[in-house]
Length: 189
Image (cartoon, rainbow, N blue to C red):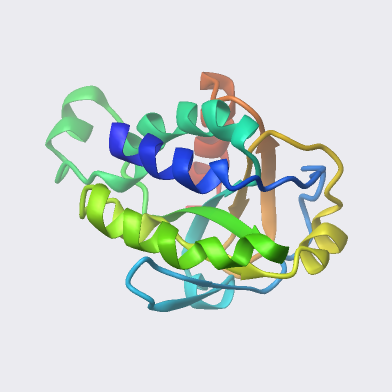
């Protein structure tokens, strides 16, 4: 998980400052053209349709600590697949969910995108690289659609199979927030 922290330290050091209001459940997540560290394009929510998706959006250096608090629990809950042995032993449900952390490069910061992608490939565990998407472009469509209002904290969205926002939260990880994410995913199975 330290590799993820390093990557986001690098990415967020470039200074992404926006304001977000996570009070958007029921709205469709706006179209976002992203790419992986290897350059594969992923259009959200279109390319993840048919599967639930957890998105974490990073905006500023100050959001780094709160964002990092989500990394390990999200990794173990949704990304690492223990092939059912641990699930059966501890009674956990298996989830079929996309998970992406999306640093957003806007304005003059778009020039840092290429360097951040190279760092991801060099420094991150190869199993985690596909979970990082890079957005490069205008902030306005997201500011309008998601009613951005606060700065310096990460935001997380659970999307249904069609791209509708079912749950939105922000800030530091808590067990209560993860419980809500899991509650929504269990209810929608």
